[in-house]
Length: 227
Image 1: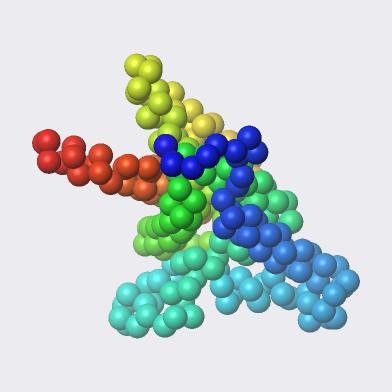
Image 2: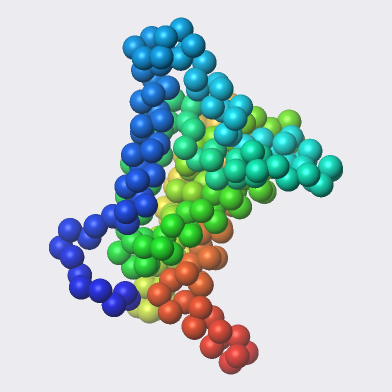
């Protein structure tokens, strides 16, 4: 556990709040612009323009790999896609989950570790998505990073169940339910390979927690030496 005084409010890590405000601020701009309330006639295309400039796409990754060219304007897409969403509902759902998971994980992890967990999961989700999803759509939204925080939360539950001598497989109930819902949604409304980024984000978050959790690196090193 962290060496800090417990707070009855269990504050959310600051970066989580800032990211939530950025996500909702960007979405408010797109929504108001699309309705003609701000920005004039050109505001209608703000969302599509932002997707072209900041979202992630496998074709761009393959172009960089084939030509061994890595412009900053494309490298930033590994993270910037997380603040662009398809709709207000999409952004709100991602933002609420971000606050909830950030709070839960932040109660155990140091706040900087929560940030690293989110960023690693966001980037890893985009990388694998770009490599395996052919004819892929644009990847947008904070969900791969949020799934990374769910991976961190799952690690916490998994560890506690192990300490209690309980079945640790129960820790994976949440991710099982979420992926089941995605499968059902895909069957009724059409699937999308973006789920690949979510799964990779979760796996990255869970595995990274072995190192990023309090004392995690020391425990991992001790286990390696013992083996």
